[in-house]
Length: 384
Image 1 (cartoon, rainbow, N blue to C red):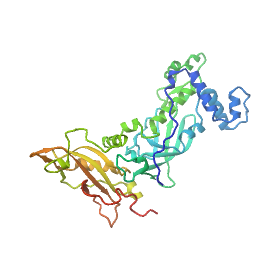
Image 2: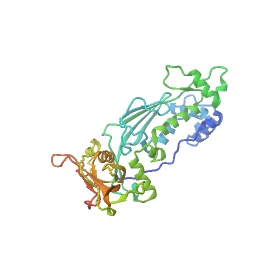
Image 3: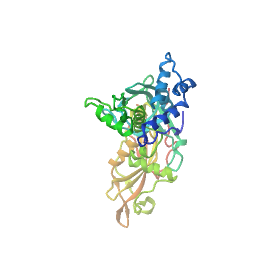
Image 4: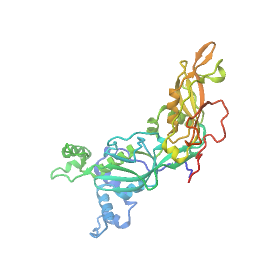
């Protein structure tokens, strides 16, 4: 299935700490009431609640009165959305504290292996438990000035019958002690947290359900991105940022240093001296992702790669492997007027599916050599 980037319309709220807890609770109650059945709205307006109501109805009623969040509201926010893990964490079991900070360690990876869709949400007093599927992003042959959303495949990389499990701690809501009603203000809530949080506790506490909801939504914003926003871009390597800068400007990459020359303006062209072997990875091999990618490389007077930008990406974490190999390679520098000069060299890097019938060494060729058709070619092996 080929789809593009999908923009969702929900956004995490602005800082609720700037208003009083009463206003927060009222705003949350009004917003949530629009999504609740009439019976729950009547209960929130003072009608006598039905003591035999179901657990979800009781939860919704409590949320209306306290400014808390319900499991249904979380489902509306998360389930079925095309998200990114901001940290690029590659483990399939992840735990975060109530502020969205990773507990433990997980190796980070390319953002092209960090797309995720949440399919299940479970909310309790102490935790949020999510289950989802991870996807790899495969670019299908577009240049920077072309629209990447129109040539992008999202390919499931989580094995069948497996899921990604994400657990997020919640700030705990406690009842204020007698005489502590002033803690229901924003300042008082912070004081209450300091008073109630024992040293051995892993999470903070609050008197305000609205405050706990804000903390949870902030944590979700720390963990997930709805799209490639500025924060996602800031965390990307420079070669991706240069690519997306060209995408935004709908132009091809230009070196930052205006002194960098083009290959057709020098007396002796730069060329690759060493072979390099960009690694594939298990995700690309398992899903038959192969083909070629284009990289713009500034070759310095010392024969080393300096600035590198993705020109035609392939995705699936392979671009990162190619850039790492280019940085290790040696080049013959360009010559002009008898002196070495910095020059822009385009490199086409090929990735193959490893088998007994294919070579395991990927080749790099100058970008001025005509590329074969289908650059890069998706899914070059038969898919079951």
